[in-house]
Length: 146
Image 1 (cartoon, one colour):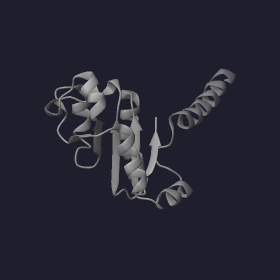
Image 2 (image 1 turned 180 degrees about the vertical axis):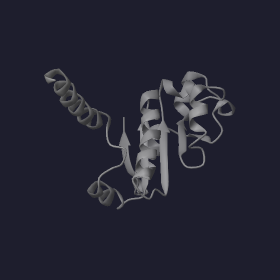
Image 3 (image 1 turned 30 degrees about the horizontal axis):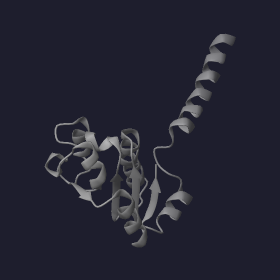
């Protein structure tokens, strides 16, 4: 009986811990209220993990009831080689194509040998990663870089 009770208690605490480790499905009311102040978001990323994470953040914002008018990911670095037609990221991006803009650093493209025609449909080259992020900040976007 004690063993069963110990397993139940352990299971309860494990469930509580897992939700705090992996985050909530929806954001709490105060966070939502704060984030409603600005409806434009831009993220600078240079790794696949962060690219995927920022797409997931879009889902979390929307499911929490946050109005998003503009959502942009600005990409530089080696992950640019993965933003080509036929890649795994192309399949992932299809869900977000009409909702999320992806700007790709043309300097990174040149260094990595990626041509504009190779990019996933809906992704656009920009002069540089830094200039695009500065431009979005000047337009009032909330920006975050990884």
